[in-house]
Amino acid sequence: MDCTVRWLGEDAGMSFVAESGSGHAVVMDGAPEAGGRNLGLRPMEMVLAGTGGCSAFDVVLILKKGRHAVSGCEVSLKAERADTDPKVFTQIHFHYRVKGKNLKPEIVARAIELSKDKYCSASIMMAKTAIISHDFEIINES
Image (tube, rainbow, N blue to C red; front, side, top):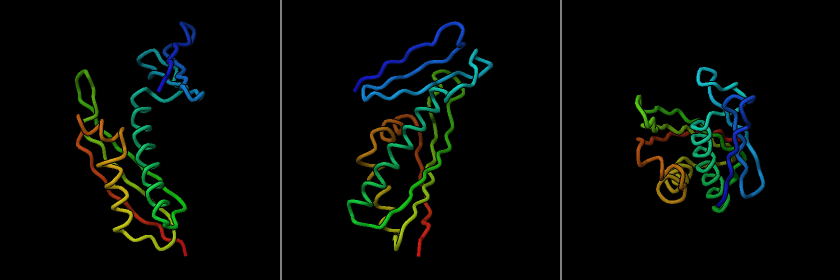
């Protein structure tokens, strides 16, 4: 896996563009009090978003592979960070909203557990410094 992060220069404040090996780009920026212009996600917000994306990807894939009628998945993350440098994540709570037909709570819970314990590299890394918690709700379609 490759990624290049490039500062956009003095005129851009603290804005950076990250370009992935797969050919995609995203803008990151710092907070205004740190010289940023609020043009993109903060780098640590990007880490949190990536962690949520990794886990949601797993949950959907696991449910689809099990031939469950999943039609939506959203995960909200709430994180706390250490007060001093390095300001690592110390707690992260994942709240999943999974939508589909006839989804059973035990099946959704199992998909989340498999992501947490086996498949989601990002959340497994985050668990080295943070207490990770999860809950979920099912939105059943008729």
